[in-house]
Amino acid sequence: MDEGGGSSLLQRITTTASEILIRNSDEFENSIKTTTTNPVVEEAYHIHYLTPTMKMLCILFYSILCVLCVYGNVLVILVIVYFKRLRTATNILILNLAVADLLISVFCIPFSYWQVLIFDDQRWLFGSMMCSLLAFLQAMAVFLSAWTLVVISFDRWMAIMFVLTPSIRITNRRALYLVAATWIFSILMALPLLFTTRSFEITEGIENCGENWTYFGDAGEQVRKVYSTMVVILQYIVPQAVLIITYTHIGIKMWNSRVPGMQNGATKKMIVDRHESVKKSILIKISAFFCQHDFFVAILVSEKCAFKNTSSSFSLAL
Image 1: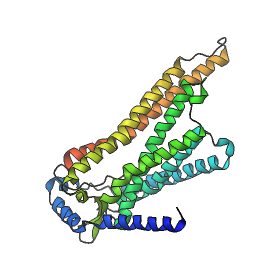
Image 2: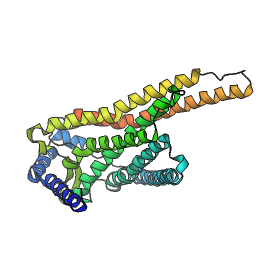
Image 3: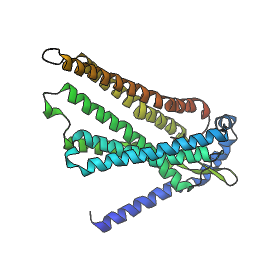
Image 4: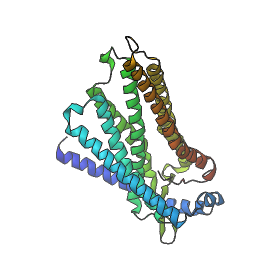
């Protein structure tokens, strides 16, 4: 496709997306007015204020976390890109993970803690288009990170299980294909939020950022429930199940492996080091599981209780 055709296509796509985002504006405002009078939503939307001290501590913590995430992931990206000898299949996947985590640290952490911690009423100041775009980027980044971890776990599993058959392991070309697949999958899964999330006025002069599924008409509520269920399954349950299975298999294999030759001091130390590596891997996976567990439990609870009788669901801060 020539440059003019590509530009024309991009313009048509942008125009269509903009039309979809502003469509049903009146219905959206009416649905918000209806849901804000619902006692169930009022209870779910009740804000528990933090003390000034706790707020400052949270802001400090997330600011440090954001800076460290950006610094660490940019460093990983630069090192892998700069040194050609590091461009292995595994490092290509790690590079993709660093990009995903960088997106999270740029688009998830700052805007989430700005909205939740800076203002007690959780107001949104960045406009409807930014609300839609950030919701899409946040969901895409989390999907990308989760499924890159899945691909890395398969790479590690194949490296341990098929040591003597390198032909079936992930090559650089296969790694690039897998990276492309994770991006396509993540974009497709996050795409609905680009068209269903926008800012809305909760009180005079104060806007919030949330979801509205009236674009799908009467089926909007059912579509929202199906999508939320798919997010929980494909962003948390399936990736965690794969990671648990692969790393458990790897751990068992490494724990039971024996170093050939006589058991002298060096080989015994090697076995002890392997066991320590397995323990650390298991501990990291357990920690990661519980770190994400509460967030997805909150989604399930909100789907079951808070938004039970409404036509509009509100975004949870990532």
